Amino acid sequence: MLRCDELPDQSMTTTARRPRKRWTYADYCRIPADRNRHEIIDGRHFVNPAPSPYHQLVSGGLQHQLWTLIRDRGRGIVLDAPIDVHLGPGSVVQPDLVVLRPRSRCIIGDKKLTGVPDLLIEILSPSNRSNDLIRKKRLYAQHGVREYWIVDGDAETVTRFWLRNRRFARGEVRHRSIRLRILPQIAVDLMAIWRQLRAGP
Image (cartoon, rainbow, N blue to C red; front, side, top):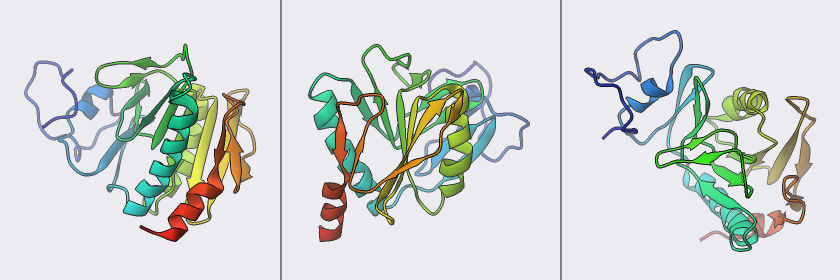
């Protein structure tokens, strides 16, 4: 099963291992579906294994609060991975969580999001730290993502970055709670998430 149905009419082979100068969205669509997370960052193909259960518990806790505070109150939309975000030529990513405000510049399509979301959230895993902390942070700033969170479940922190002059300003680290810059009336209770994780199943 393939990821996309927008392929040109030509013979298709697996491209995940084929060396290329620059990957495109069409190349991305030809990657056979598997349990890995595939992304294209500045034309380069990156593969990460499926997230761990702990990673997903952190994601679920954040998503639950954001959904309740944003979606249920008509303040926007919250989406979780796996979802393709096509930022532009040579850049297709799968953030852990995506927040879109009403009248967002990002277009919701049948197969993917196209354009720039208002808030992207990435949860660190051992396999993706360099991507989230360096490559994707730079990519998101270049494309104009207004707010970016990096969540470290082990350290129980969220680092919030805010776009200024096409660059992310110095990160603000939060432990107890965090307020959205794009929606200042919304605050997430981080301590509730950490306590639930410490308590276990």
